[in-house]
Length: 400
Image (cartoon, rainbow, N blue to C red; front, side):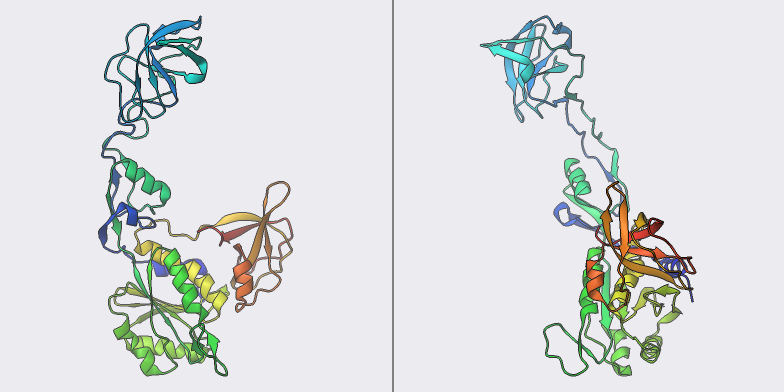
């Protein structure tokens, strides 16, 4: 059986980003930049005030009760058109352009005004409370690299740089095919032996959260003709994810059907818990990932293998999953030859340390435990027993 890291590397190997497309800035959130973004202007576009107060010449301020003549004001969007000379000042507001001749700001709380005379004891050096032109970024500077996942911060930065459109990688289209005679959609009548198809909806949400476009296919029943029909259903997709096959015999059926439609199998079975029966292959250039039917195993494998592959298809270099550190909140037993992923709650102790407390029940069909977990605690293959207070590696589930 392959290790988790080797299996993930083999899935990622050879994956290429989807083609770029141009989208409006309002539609770019969650997408990945397909080319660097360069500033189209200076920000700020001119020297501006960082505070409400008075624009002055620093050379005029001695701190001995200086009086300056008020010659105008410079509200945001309406710059003062004149020049501040010796012994003069201009009323100014946060975000307003500093008028020519002025090089510092006197805070309004440090000044008093009577008619057109401003009095202050503030002493200032040139540049006090002034944001210089281009202080944030200059025209032509690269502000967002290619391969950056565009979150709210990046969208705000691109907008400030005057970009209405961005080049991003197309969202990968992922076909999801659940297999099994026992599956019915949530809400449908359930006969004897039937179960709600939770896996498909769960994987749909996971794939969408990763930034891709899930496409739910009809359930493939346990008949070879249904499974072979996949070849027609998945045309034009960027990835195929199959779900199901708790027994070896059923998964043999899926493998055989995929081989018949031209899938070149890479591996099946990895040394992990939950999720041992993970399958990977290629249909032409399209990656095919077969997930276990147990819901928790399907989710864990989706997190460890499907989501990283999708991030690579979207053009990201760092695909995860991101590994963090915590302190064990309970003893855990020695591990066998399979790398284990324990569902765990997270909390902080009185010292502010992050504590991971694995659930006593780790059955791979217990969705309630998975839903209540904030992390997966990683236990290496053949790891010795670990004690409460030991450091541990985790994958957080409560951070998108």
